[in-house]
Image 1 (spheres, helix red, strand yellow):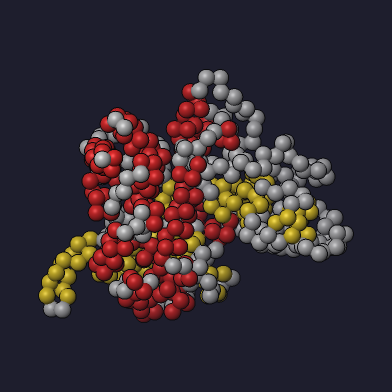
Image 2 (cartoon, one colour; image 1 turned 90 degrees about the vertical axis):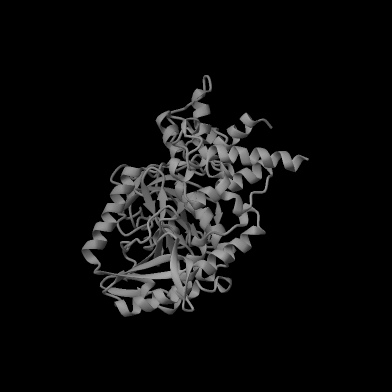
Length: 400
Length: 85
């Protein structure tokens, strides 16, 4: 059971997407775990063949518990300890999982009730409202045809099913993962309270003229179909990702009383959830993505997050967060650092302002970029240079 | 495609984005961003969905014309007509 956030202690295994004998490669999604942040897809980092599943469906196990055994290609069958899906390394293959639930040490073969492998319940994308309604009415999402983007199940789809006469609704089926907003609020509260307790924040703000970005976007988007168009948000994320490479004191994790900078830049994108919730999953290697790639990944990430389909690595490894309250938001926002990260950049909405350019006043579109930094790692001086670098990068959008 | 059908398509697509709203009760003259709390990404998804479903091109410069339910229906009606002729 991987740790999917600073305050996660345990997770409930709600779906296996693999069975013993299946071959997996690095990055494959093998299971779905329900946490306070909603259903999270778990990837494997170990290629090989699934030897044994160690955790039953619906079992809640502590972080660190091996979930399954994977035999690496070429590894002898009776060999000791094939590596597990998650650290720490397990004892010999024959030993029970170290944190096995106190319940029965079930040696029975775990071939769950007809495992709906391919279009399984949890694998179906569905809006949070649709999941909620389906859960309330005891409807199995796997029997519904989605009409939303990418076949996602919408509220209306579930509603149609509800009103369909004599709809078969087997309530004994395993429950679909849901975005539990109350649990999410608890998780946010825990992480933010810890941040305010432990992290000595300092705050800076810097106004950036984004007129060049807006002109560049208007020109580029005019020639593109809607699904290829870019938003200003993609430019600001790329600018932050590029800038932070030059200022590594804002990128990484503060753990065990020391700062560990990271080479990779995984930008956490703060995403609001309809109905009141927030998650900041990672856009991996944002500094290396072209703007088009970054935009399409961001679109996908936002859609999956709002549908309650985040992957484990996206939850656990953002190295810096960017929060933007959007065009209807406020001009300035100061974020609270998400531990164990050490910085969060806030992007306000773009507003028209009188601006002095070459000695004359003209209307320009201006965004206020803020930084909340961790004083255990950096000082305001470095923070100011970091913000200035973001502003500079945004003056030449074609080079982002 | 009749005006009623277009309205239905628009309402369905908006409902996919904001499922908690009953689109038939949303003020057709209200700014959708406020009426159903959608952001720029949601709006882009709405435009993309309309583009895919009805095959009409909606340039960015026309976005303000689609910012109300009535506006979107009128815009689509006009453009569906012109693309057929």
